[in-house]
Image 1 (cartoon, one colour):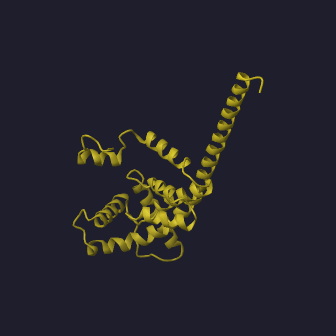
Image 2: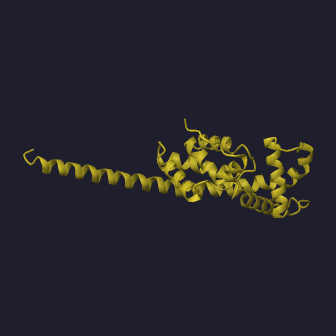
Image 3: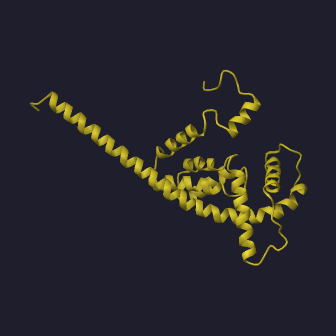
Length: 211
């Protein structure tokens, strides 16, 4: 019923992943409306959304939905909100997230006197390695585990440590902002409904002054 009459070509499907058909502004507005209208307490919604954002900082590509849901249940958050939160990790932000994870993780390792044999990767090198990881996990390329083992050793531990640190920061920040947004919207909605009820009561009283 809801399928397109003319299916999108593979090229257009790939374009839609990188650039939404109706633009990012409309996409973000849609996601925001979905979040604030979710059932549950503001704290559970904020906790779930924050879990999705935090999961986006981990190097476990392809498992972000599962990890976000697990974090949401751990923190008693809304699981659907956690799925929406994973949209923070997308083709436009992944390279920046990976680079930040790697830099922070490498700094932490060096700060504790370890990782002397780890060399700093460039953005191109990091992007190439993570691209191979994505192809390996999605079975879309002829990439074997042996091909990845050396690269994984170079990047996985720094990214895991950095992703944990940045994910924790992202969780707290996202929780506070989402909690404020949901509470503010619900308060605004309650006031609007109260005013509408008062106007309806006033109109009914004016129409029937003998009551």
